[in-house]
Image (cartoon, rainbow, N blue to C red; front, side, top):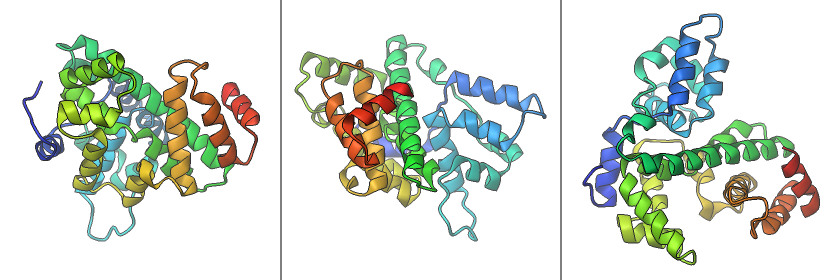
Amino acid sequence: MQDIKGLKNWVEYLSRSELPVLKQTARELAVLRADEKKLTVLAITGVIARDPMMTVKLLRYLQQHKRKVQTAEVIQVEQALLMLGIEPFFNNIAPQPLVEDMLKAHVAALAPLLRVVHRSHRASQYAMQWAVQLRDLHYEEVRIAALLHDISEILMCCFAPDEMQQIRAIQQNDKALRSQHVQQQVLGFSLAELQRELAIQWGLPQLLLNLMNDASNHQQRERNVTLAINLARHSANGWDDAALPDDYKDIGELLHITAHEAMEQIRDT
């Protein structure tokens, strides 16, 4: 879609672009706005919570319009909406353009994108559930970190669908290739590099950046996010995926239960 080369140019382009949202998100927000009885911060939060792009769109706007008196970092969607207000939210963060409209000329790219979004939402649910079990009072921050873990992949599926399809084709032909190697080959940079630069450029909270970073997963909260992402990825291939037994073992260690108990708990959710 765009003839953009290099990490720096992509960061600049995405930073000045209006981020797309899912058609379902736009539809549900329109329904809420049309009914004052249903129009609450909690209801809006519930809609945004399922869409990684709408979530990062809100956080990006809030960071770009941060007041001088604001010292604490805002990560939670409900908190962001309370600070911003319902009417300013609708006036300044429109649920458009639509992903489906952006990809009308690249129909084959829509299904893979929706799979990544679904996987991200699944990961966010796992991460939140485990955070609650671990008595993490800030479980919503963990949920958002898991939801946004693959936001650069989602955005590139929208803005560079041909390149992302090329990456998928190469990996399907040779499953032994590392994702970062193929991304570097096609894009000239890895999606992890792009994500880090975007997070910095957009001023996303440092805690969110830390939680989204797989390299720093020695802490309980980071570990939670990483394991939730792994489980969502592997289970997307089917519950007979060869990597799942190791996932159950790691999740069991996180939750202080056995691998079998972890498996049963996951299958029941």
